[in-house]
Length: 229
Ligand code: DC
Image (spheres, rainbow, N blue to C red):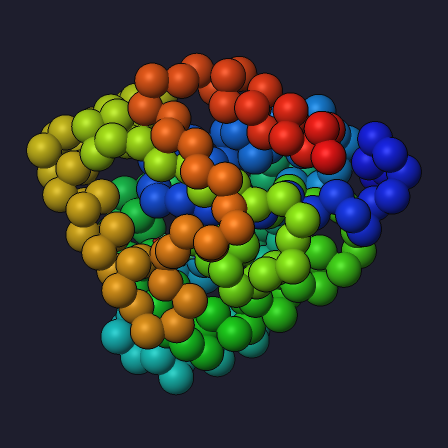
């Protein structure tokens, strides 16, 4: 895929922020508007968490999780209809990685340093291929610190919990809003306090509070910055 200017390597856009800030929706649209690859790095951690659950692996066993990643064939891409899909060991796990039990365990899986090292290698290798919009927690600070465009999306806890609730409801899961809020707070804490590459705003990232903004307003803000440079 060719970016608008044709200089693919210059088109690296990092989008970070906490759960429910709107990163994946926005990043996917930005990538599509610019004709770039989109990589949802959270989906990669989710796929590994799913593999751990499916194999009965103890998620407290860091060494086993690293081995599991080495054995895992994780692929994030698009199907012929340009719908985002995630494959684990050849199986389409796009829906399965959004299940509540994956939600509840993924932050612990993502806190293992060896798991992060393996994931970051894979993410950097994909970015080497050319223009990419990558979203996650540590893209601007750690995975791609030289990315020319960095955005940090935030939103109030209420707005983020409400978005998660809608997302899960659309998938047929009914989760108590109070429980969801607590889960988001717990995941924020784990993501922000882990020893390796915690969730942080890069000093050179542009912060966008999405609480009161529509998806298209956020996308337009990002495109204005990227196209304006
Ligand atoms: O964005 P998400 O909810 O799909 O992310 C799933 C989990 O993976 C979340 O707990 C944070 C973690 N994650 C991470 O640590 N680093 C990333 N680059 C992406 C996600």
